[in-house]
Length: 163
Image (tube, rainbow, N blue to C red; front, side, top):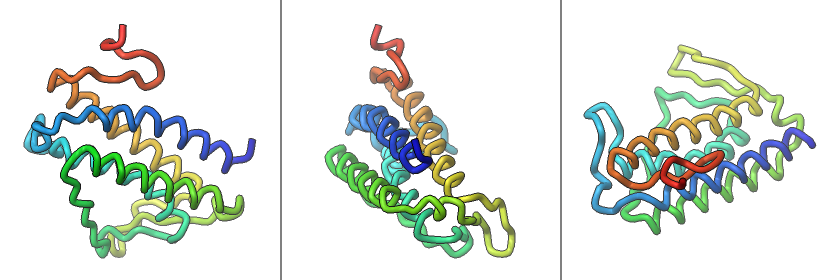
C-alpha cells in the first residue's frame, strides 16, 4: 500500500468516528464550555469539522504563518450545517490527497509565527499531524459530551455507553 493510499484509508476510517461524534451535539448546549479557557461546544465541533480541509491547505501551500493568517471559522448555526461543512472539508481534503503525487508528500512545509519558525515537516508529516489534531479534539468533544450526559460513541471499539 502506498503512503497516499494509507493516508486515504486512515482519513476514511477516522471520518466515520468523527461524524458519529459531530452528530451528537445538543443544539441547546452550543454555547456551553467546561472551563473559561475551553472552546465553546459548537466552536470545538466546528474546528473538528474544518480540520480535514487542512489536508488541502498542506498540499497547496509551503507554510502557515500564524502572524499573518486571517483565521475566520465558518459561522455554523446548527448540526445540519456542521455536518454539511464536515462533508465538504472531508471531500476537499480527500480529493487533494487522491490527486497528490508521492514526491509532493516529501516537500517541506513550515509552521511559523512571523520570523519564528516553530517546526518544519514534510507534507506527509503535516497530514499525519492534522489527523492527530482531529483525534485530539474529538477526544475533547467526548469529554464535553460526557459532562453533558450525552452518550459518547465508541472510537476504536465500543464506549462505556455502548455496553
